[in-house]
Image 1: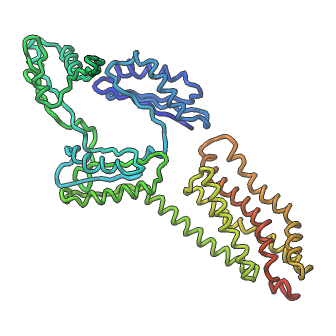
Image 2 (image 1 turned 90 degrees about the vertical axis):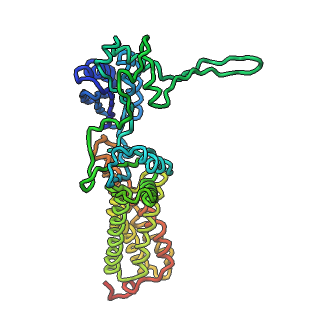
Length: 459
């Protein structure tokens, strides 16, 4: 069923405080949303998470996520002031990386975030179709202020006072404009800190105490609660995500080529690059295997048709229905927004044997009429097709009608997957019916009568 996931990072606290100040207010606000089937919530020292599942399979998760954001914004004043942000996530195939790359070197890369961001992340993010690139295993640098409690007490300073001072000193706001002598000047007080020394020299007390007198200020990588290893060495992960409407195979292949170009940089000669997962290659391999199986099935179908028809022109005429029906089905899928994936390819393969059924029936009916009217091939084609038209229509509709519950019935996991197969089979069968009552009679009227049909000893 459709679901959304709400994540509220709130580090530096306790699970009890997170539950009381963050989780409960948000859960109470979101529990009034309509159509909720289940809510799973958890709180830990780093924040809170809510998993909301809906009972209606037709529920638009994008609208549900927007409604959840509105409800959280409505209670924003009830949440802690230092809760900087929250995330409302909805599942999509674009949430999975199309390319997973791991980097390892003789040197420790966990502190090389700036280099990886400059050489890999920024270059890959500029590629068309790439939504974002995430780096794991090499945390970004952050400013750490390690306070000496004894010095803080000796200068008669409180931790809350220090926190308020640090929050207020780093700012950049707009103070409006001033018009003077026909000129309009924009006033913008700026108090941003540009380097660590400015932070160390910051005066925090009335007696002239500087921050460096009571604390050690340093730049260090952020805390990382996990580690990566590649062949026994510390490794860094790079995950590439595609845009929602981008082609998966094109994005993965383009990103992989860019990674190979980056590896050629002289400064990265000792860097080991390993591709952990490439969804584009997986999809291409699966489609090629299905296409190969479909080609083998097509050849076998032609062999079986020739075994029974014993006439190559008739066999080729019936076989012509298969590519024509495929083209018509693929055209419908393109304009209907149905993607070519493993399920739809499977539906096309299952339909190969059924596509020639209608054509074979029409050909046999026409040849029977050709025996009675050997000098009137056009009339024989019309009469032969008319004799079996109703039966073909009924048979084709019976094949298609069994998929109606999957297409228009209750939505669940099984019906969602089967609908991909149902669409391709139904459309291809309808296309085969159209070919059988239009193209096949037209071609039959211009062909000679098969020898087996014209011979009294033919079987």
